[in-house]
Image (cartoon, rainbow, N blue to C red; front, side):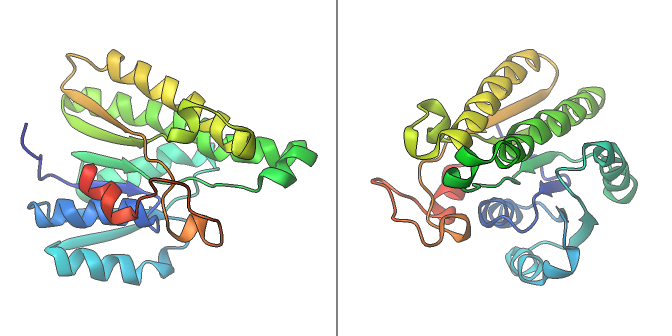
Length: 213
């Protein structure tokens, strides 16, 4: 199946993996990109990478993943500016602090809110819009941490486990709609999110994950 070169939306525009995937899509002929992030003024580096890879249009849209009530308005703005995206890379998320989450229920819930609840909310909205268009690809990032939840990061892992189950079911529900969902399960990724942590065996980089995607 070939790449649809229509507009690409990256939710989590500062994500290293999200940017790396977008750069590869630009190299494959996609010209229009929307980078959605909380701090749109800090997207110069990501925009420059995309333009260097061949992007002709890079739009920035303010997006707070934790603001569920604002998701629909963000997608409305994206459609008003570039049309319905052909590809959506859902790349936002937090690792959180496991030790803090074990002591503080609010910290644990905050991790699940960003990594599971917000993802479920925006994916449900996106699925409806892409179904109506009859086409599109959703790229969702689960994790090996969610395939087998371990003691060291069970709060993050449980959020990814929930997302993995939801995305798997959504992929099945989209069958025959013209919309597909690609569920990606990286292992430990050496990057900004894991800075200061000891890499696990078989670690990868954002570029290696993007190549696989």
